[in-house]
Length: 147
Length: 143
Image (cartoon, rainbow over all chains, first blue to last red; front, side, top):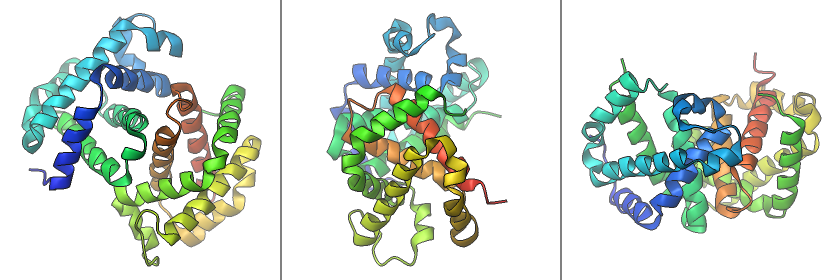
């Protein structure tokens, strides 16, 4: 089980209460597809991903951004058992979607940047550290079922 | 993943915009690296104070960002212009090159907090590529 400090718990819940899922989710996934274009390999069915403008205005990308945020919210609500919370999602990403798990932190890095842009000065080094730890636990849980 | 002409243009234009806050950028990036990735503190055990905003952190942030500015100005020959720094990191400091990526990510986060509108995905990509190229040039003399 992951040991969270009080500061970390409060900070994670605070971040997720402050950010707009409809903005942050789509921004993070589209940033990932633009900055790390090889991640587009998993979204062949999404239509036009030809350039940054197309990615940013693609409705399937935006919809998927929201799906991701809803998944992360489950982790926020179950911080003491993220591993169990994500067992099915991990199996899905491994067996059905066949996503190289090294990609998870690429999305995580983009999420950190989008949240940083939203929170500005409030995204202090300490808040950033708590968020990075949360991301590391989420990524580790998503990697868990790969074999 | 080498830098295209457009990447270089994007990096130079963005860096010109942000260089007024270079000191803060460097200091915040180093502070974040030490706080968010505590394993990096192992390279600074000789500092009295590793907390964000401390004198050694500010000073080192200044040194790092000055080198980045220099690299932006010599973007067409990173390996050549970073030769001496590469020797320093390889033979004296012996920093594991994996840490260059960590510092790079922290620089990008700082830029996002300070310039949320200008730090578009396109600028982010060009800078990510540039910092990776910089890291490669810095690793040149390692082995």
